[in-house]
View 1: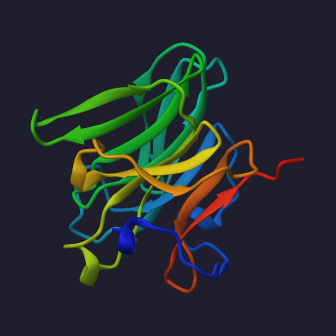
View 2: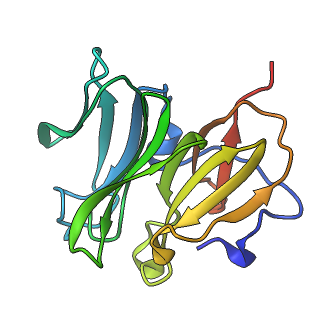
Length: 194
C-alpha cells in the first residue's frame, strides 16, 4: 500500500531491486516470485520469473529458472507486458493488446483469473509493492499507468476499482517500470520526454 495514496514530497530515487533491477523491454519483464504458480510456500523471493510476448504478438509466456515456459494469455497484436504476483503467487499481468491496456488478475469475488480492459491507459505496469514476509498483511499489487498526461495507480485491495492520482501533467510518454528500490521505497520510472 502506498502511504497517503501519494508520491513522496521529496523524491529519493535509488536503484531498483528484485526483478525490477533487471533491464526490461516493452515485450519482456521480470519479477521475483515463488517456487511455482499459486505456491508461495518458499516466499515471494525464491526465483526470478520472466513474462515475454512471443514474436508474433499472439501470446504471453511465463517461465522461471525452475519452471518450464507456459502460455498464460493469448491474443492479437500484444505489444507490451508487465508482470507481478499477488501474495498467493497468482500472476497479475498488465499488457497492451491492439492498443488497449488490459489487466489479467485474480478476482476473489469470482474465484477466478479475469481480464479487465482499460481503454485510454498508456504503458500499464504492475508490481507487488512489498514482498517481505513481515509486510504481507499490507502488501498490494500496484497497477500504474498514464492517462491524459497524468500518472495514476489502482491497487489490488480495491479490486482495482478505485483510481488514485499520483502526479498531474507529467512530461513523459509513459512508464518504463515500477517497483521497490534499495531504500525500500516504491518508485516509478518514467520514460524520457525526448
